[in-house]
Every structure is written in structure tokens, then in C-alpha cells.
Length: 143
Image (cartoon, rainbow, N blue to C red):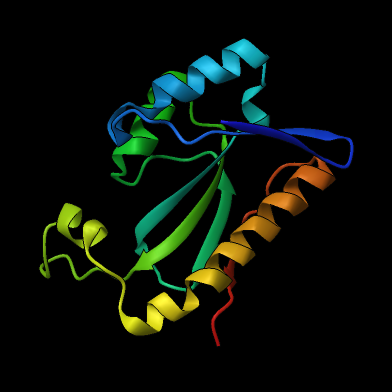
């Protein structure tokens, strides 16, 4: 867990050390302790059904089969912000989803990780500074 400020906004970033499918417990505990309303929580996670190089933003919705998001919904409700970072596409017959997520990125993808991280950080900074809801949009940042 880390805390800081972006302008006048206090920011708390956590990376649960629980198993992914129990991450909602950790987020719920931090949200309760710091009295963070659900609409100010943003989860950032990998998404195999989104192409590498796309970042999708939204508030609310289902889990789309993501076990970490299922846990967040179970413990918080579904109206939190989501930054879905594309690591796909995964051909559903290609391999098991767990094996796909744990596989190494291709050389081309590895070369773009720094850009992907920078764009995700910029999105979170925009959200924190504006203090508004996450927009519902898809950003493609690879050329």
C-alpha cells in the first residue's frame, strides 16, 4: 500500500497480497478503514478479451469471468471504476486462460510495456485530478 497526493487529492494505491480471487477482501478492508466511497475506487487489471494496446475505462458492470473482479463485486458491489488493460487477444481454444495470463509477452509487446504503464498512469492521474467519474471509453495507444 502507498499513499500520496495529486494536487489536493489524497490517493491510496494498494496491491492486495491475497490470491487474486480474494482481492475484494483486501480492497474492502482498506475502503472501510479510510472511509472511501465506492464511486472513488478504481480497479486496474489485465484483460485477456481486450487487445494488447487497448485500455478500456468504465464504471460498473459485471466481472466478464475475471475472478479478481468477481471478488471485488462480491465485497464492494459493482459500481466501482475499472481500468481494463488489454493483454489479448486470447484465442479461446489456444490455451487455458491461466496459462495465457502467466505466459511471457512477445518481444513486440515487451517493447511496449513502458508505454502501456505510462498511459495507464496518465489515465489514473487524470481521474484523480478531475475528481469525477471515469469516462466510458477505449483508448488505443500503440501505433
